[in-house]
Amino acid sequence: MFGPQLLRMAFRWAVLITLAGGALALLSHRGTPQFVVSVFMFGAGVLFTALVVVLSRIPGR
Image (tube, rainbow, N blue to C red; front, top):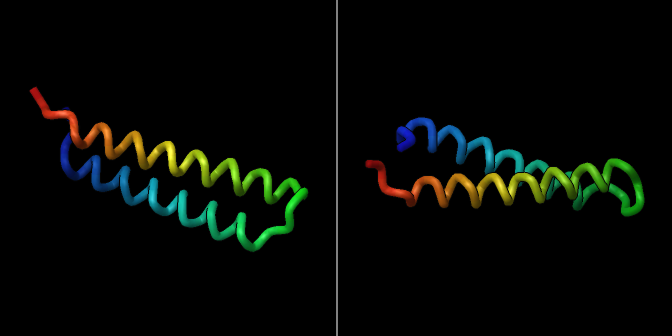
């Protein structure tokens, strides 16, 4: 379905987005717009990581 190189690249991006969002959320002050954007980015990274994991488990036909 998807090539292993494409999934590897997508997984690396997903991990980068998740780590960056989590680090920024930990370092920013609560109640600021930066915190809200960081938490949103962290959530998007987690969802993107889950999507890549699910797609990598689907066997190709």
